[in-house]
Image 1 (cartoon, rainbow, N blue to C red):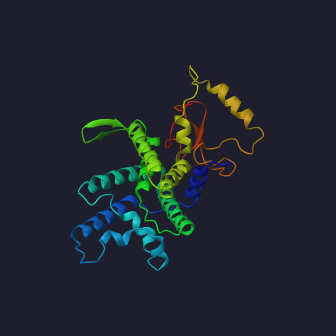
Image 2 (cartoon, rainbow, N blue to C red):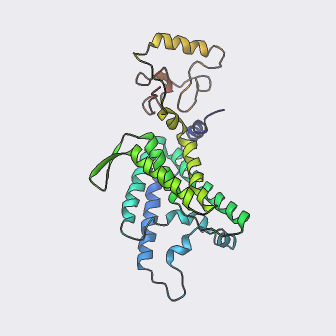
Image 3 (cartoon, one colour):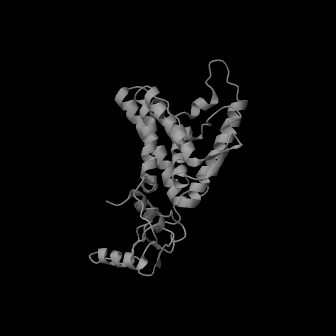
Length: 282
C-alpha cells in the first residue's frame, strides 16, 4: 500500500496551482483582528462575548450559523497579550512547513486537521445529543508535532533565553496531549487523538526514521548497492523511482533521476527532490 503522503505529493505535483499561498499569514492576521475586536467589544447585559459567535457549535451550525464550521480556527489562543507570541509561533511553524512541503501539501495538511475536528464534533453531537464546543488548539499542536518531527534538532529560545531542541519541546507537547486524554471528560478527550491522526498521515516516514535501528558501520559501497537495487527492480516496470514523490522513469520518461550520497543507503530522487528531501538515516 502506498504511503498516503506520497499520494498527496503526487497530487500536488500534478496540480501545481492547488493550495493557498501564505495560508498561515492570513490565519494569523484574521486571528489578530478578532483578538482586537474582542478586546474593544463591550457586550450589553445578556449578550455573549464576541468570540462566542466564532465557536464551533454543531447545534447552532445546523440552525443556520454555518460560518462556525470554519470560524473557530480564527479564535485566538488567549485573550491576553501572550496571544501574539502564539501568533508568531504559529506563523513561523506554518510558513516553514509550507516552504518545506510546498503550498499544496501544507494546505491539505492544515485543512485535513480542520475537517477531522469538524467531523468529530458532529459525531459527538449525533451520538450523544450534546452540543460540544471544540477549539482549534490541537490542530496547531499537531502542526507543531510535524515541525518537530522534520526538524528535531533545531533549537529555539524557550522563555526567550533558554535554548531547547524542538524534539524536547515535542515531548512536552506529547505529555500535554496525554494529560488531556486522561483528564478531559469523554468524548471530548479523544480530540487530541483525532489531531494526531493528521500528524501520522503526513509525518509517518519521519517517525519511522527516528525509531532506533541497528546502524551499519563503514561507508556505503555504491557499486554493490546499485547492483542490489537493479536486481530488486528486474521484475518492476521502472528503473528509477523517487523516494519522496513516488514518480518513476516509466511514468515520466523526461524526468531526471539522481542518487543522494548524503543519505544512508542507496536512495533515488527526482530532480525536484534531490536537493529537497529529508536524508535517510538507516
